[in-house]
Length: 197
Image (cartoon, rainbow, N blue to C red; front, side, top):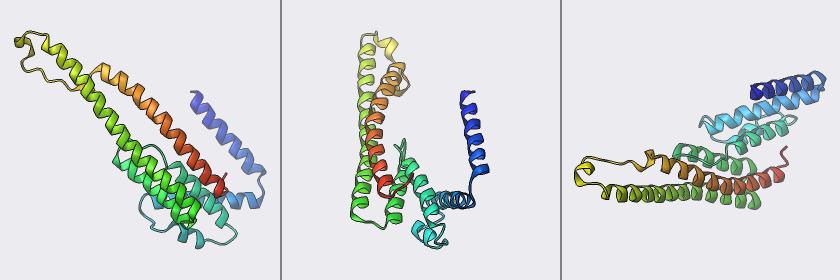
């Protein structure tokens, strides 16, 4: 309920801002929305060149379009849980490079973001595999202590065991915390260099 209330509060605040906004602020907000739409089209694969979408706009709204697009693309640089999410996050990093034009400093930051995203997935898979092996070994030791008749036909999926779930939740939370801090730092640097929000 608190989440709904906070969303409603945000809507009311936005409505109040729009009510008191100048025509220039409204134009900027519309341009920002257009930038969000362009970013979504790019991330969904419906648009190849986000930079061209900016330059096709009137010069007076290009800044707003760029801001909306950059904010949206940066929000899509996140820790992926699977290959599909990793593709989207990497595409977002590539989008930043395309928007910016591939200058040295941004290109360097984007390379670091790419390394973090790929490294995270490898590290996550490695830790999960190690934990599966540990839990499986523990259960195999317990089974070895049982009479052979009771062991026959027992197959254990370590990932379904409560012990695995508890430990994985802890390990994944630590891993996510470390990688999220690094991602956020680089995303903040990009935002500052592109003078966004």
